[in-house]
Length: 287
Image 1 (tube, rainbow, N blue to C red):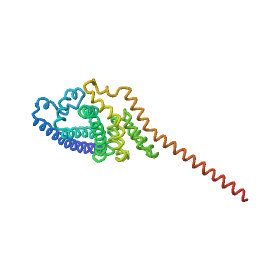
Image 2: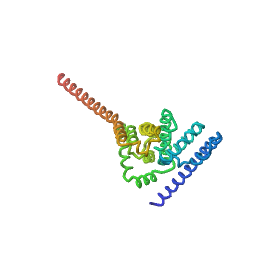
Image 3: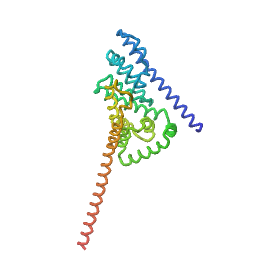
Image 4: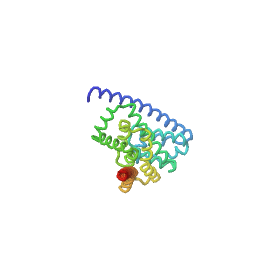
């Protein structure tokens, strides 16, 4: 790595650490305030003292703390909801693994009609924040270096796919497909998109709509939290197959559009040929 690249990477990392630190401090302050308010209701502090960000780190931790979290939401719903939103958005913004556990949590402590739209919105918000961090705190060289190290060859491949879809006027359909497809690395799409000329006005809704099926499945599974043995129980082969088929379905409008465009071009050519033949025949008659 050249000295210039090393300096750019160090600068980007420093900026990211500062933003992450400020976000973590604000989130921790809100969570601390929430715990103080819950304790003021006279609840025993023993269970509350065991809570931490680690409580969202795994299915087992979440199951162990579920009753305590449910009590917190019952006592201080608005502030508890705000704390959850901050934690979720922070995880998405900084590409921290664990969105499935947070979706389970939302489904376990909130009714489905609240949890599902909330999670869908926070997913799009966090991904958009990641997009903006990549755009304004990093550089194309840094992002390309990270992608080349973690996913060799994927960035040029994605660039070619996006350019082809953009030229055909089908960019949004491809973005939807990439989000619905269960094997797409979302962190990679979030980081790379601003450097592949994907506009935020298409990026954000593609995340919101494209990840809806996954979010719905995982949030709905939260209602049966106690019966889950692992997060993989939510995404069995049948469910993954359904997501793959749905992803392929996202390409149908693009294919129909291309077919209609081809049919229209053929019709235009046929009309032009017919008019040319008529004009030629008319000239023959006049001569």
